[in-house]
Each structure stands twice: as C-alpha cells, then as structure tokens.
Amino acid sequence: MTSLTPLEVQRLAYIRFLFEEGIDYSRRPAPLSATAVLVLHDAVELFLGLAADHHATDPDPKIQFMAYWAELKKSEAAIHLPGQGSMRTLNDVRVAMKHHGTPPAEQTIERSAADVLRFFTTATPVVFDVDFDRIDMVDLVAQEAVAQLLRDAQPWADRGDHTHAMAGLSLAMDALLDYYARPDTPFGWRETPFSFGPAVTWRHVAHTDSRTIEGQVSMLSAIAKETRTALQIICLGIDFPSFARFQTLAPRVHGYYDHSYRYSYLPSDPATPQQYSWARHFVIESALRASRADEALDFMHGQEAHTERMQAKSQERAWTGPPTD
Image (cartoon, rainbow, N blue to C red):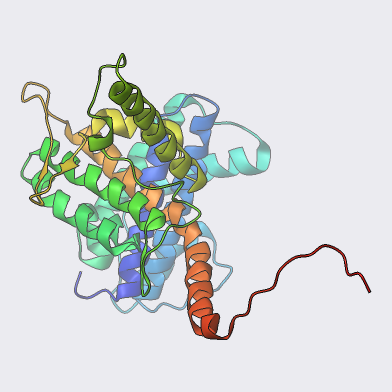
C-alpha cells in the first residue's frame, strides 16, 4: 500500500472494520440482522468517497450514491468500477428499509453481504492497487502494545497455526486491560479508575483445597480476579458476552518468572480460521471502544503533573467544625 497516504490507509482500515461489523450483524437473528444493510451500505459509501478523493475527482459534496461510477470513470485514471448493478440493488434495499420501513428478508441480507464482499474484493485492487484482504484493521488501534501483539499474531495465522495465533490475541487482550488499569506514566505505574484494585494473577489462586485457610483465601482471590476483570470490561464499554465467548476460544497465556509465556492446548482441537478471524475482530473492536477512556487517563496524568509541581507549596489544615467567631 505504498501509493496510499497514512490517512488513506487508516480510512481503508475503518472501511474494513465497518464491513466486518456488517457481516457480524448479518449473522444475528432478525430483526437485528437488518442492521447489516445499513452498515454495509455505509462501508461501501465510505469506500466510494475515498476512491474519489484518492483519484482527485473532486465530486459534488451532495453526490448521489450511484453517481460515483460515472465520477470515477471520468477521472484521469479512468477507473471502471465494478459491481454497479449489485450495489444499486443494495442501495434500493437500504432505501426501502430506511425511508419506507420495509425490512429486508433473510435471503436479501445474505445476498447483500455476499455482494458487498464481492464488490470490495474486486474493486479494491482496481481503485487502490491492493488486495482487500491486505487491509489491516490494526491500523485503527491506538494502544501500541496491543497493536504490536496483534501484528505478531497474524503471521502464525497466515501459516495456518491459528491456535498459536489465538494465544497472541489472548496476550493482546491482557495488554489492553493493563493499558487502562496500570498505565506507565512519567511518575511510574499508577492505578486508575479502571484498575479496581491490584492485579490478581494465577499465582494467587493456585491453592484448590477449600477446607484450608489457604484454600479459602485462594477461592476468594479467584472470585476477586474474575470480578475485577468483569468490571474492567464493562466500564471500558466492551461487550461482556462477546468477551465471555473470546475467553472460551483463546487460550489463557501465563507469564513466568523467567519472562517466558506459555499456554496449554489440545492438539486434537485446534482453533479454526473462522474463530481466529472473529476473535481478532473482537480485540480490535474492544480497543476502539476502550479508547474512550483515554480522555480520563490524560486528565489523570495532567493532575499528577500538577500535583508534583505544587507539592512543595502545599499546606495542611485541620478541620475543626463550623467557625466559632
């Protein structure tokens, strides 16, 4: 994607993200599945707008959806955009639903999802000289450690080792929660409103005999660990049922004193490409949802810096009740 600017790469990544969202909606039960038509249409419309910008056609700001085919054809590159007929059908379905209250049938939703996939697959190389599958949504992830782990996991999936790739996704989710629970600031590690107490690791819950004091403490630690994680997920705006599904798919990866990371798995039950694809999309979506908390962290860091500067000038007063004079 060397011919694309960083902003165009990010816009393409967002289009890919919307497409994945639309596909996810298309698999939900009615009437939720009807939302897929709106999301898929938005993804295509954003793609068309980016295509016009990339080829500098300068279209009318009020350009109609179907006018982009003629607009791109008259560009200097004379782009012959495919999929005009199927996208016209998608637009008709969207108009019928949004403006006339006519919900699409299940078969119509499935056909729309297939048509949009075919459109992106064929149009992206024509317009941007890149395969649609090469567009990586990781470019949307602002948390660097999370993004790096997602990138590290992908080559294992490309090799067909989706179980090992899922371990990387597990570490990426852990890194996401750590990013908001224990951010590394100029003043060292600090707890945040998203910490909910100190971290509870597997070492705190290793004892299993509940008849002993150690076992009871271990049991309470296990409860605290799960509760703390659930509070973090919910307060960061991440979908908890999806997180529960993610936990059943991705192996738990444990860190050890020698700085190694290991996990257990069943060779007879490897992760599938579909499971990996869903889990990767979930981690990216979670990172985007959690980024709403960045403002709170930035404010906290600013307050810490202000406190450090003012600490030498601070004074202490005692509270004695209402004034007596």
